[in-house]
Image (tube, rainbow over all chains, first blue to last red; front, side, top):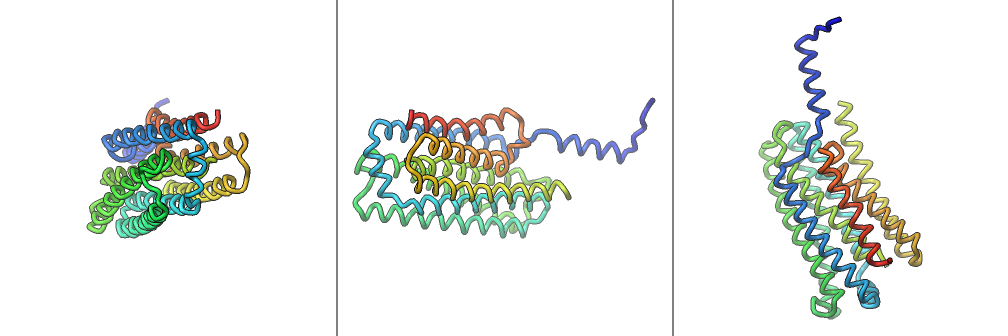
Length: 204
Length: 88
């Protein structure tokens, strides 16, 4: 028995097959960059854990000087910021650039809160006399969190650039690869912070 | 229309879960004394948060299996490795 399909049915079938195909969002180069960044952060995390294993008392007393609520606020702001960026990707795919721009600006606002809170914590620690040279805990703490802080700054520049381009209606359902790549970078920053939060503020 | 609805809904649920798990992990960490079950719970919460970010926010749920596996492995292996270094 043969089945005759109309042109419309063939087109619908092709679209469904395309939708089912596994697809890596964004740009392949960005994914390799993200893998490289994650590897560097993994080395820092392992270094931090090994140093703590070798000198647990130093790290326990070091952690007591940190503000737990700073870690909590930083995590919440980065998660909320990532949430707005993920929604912005959905809006771009719906060809709704104005909504995507508003969501990106909200994401940037929460990222600014993260920066403010983190800078306040650095200022408090420095005023108490703690800096990179105090001991191994503070060396690793400042180095790892400041390295992440710089990634947040870079991510904010990328989000700002994306917001400017959405304002000009550059992105659309069929032209959102660059937007997805920028969003993926921001989520990587969030993923790294989740692990950093666990290592610096949660474990004891 | 249904797929767009579920895509956004998935993001809402994931974000809510991430916020709840963050509050839960800090609460457990502050108000319970250190023990093996607390460590396992905190690692598990971190792994779930990592999985949500990679699968939902980074959209790797629909990505080629190797890429998804690699990123998920990172989110799972690193917290377990860190806990192993610190506690074993």
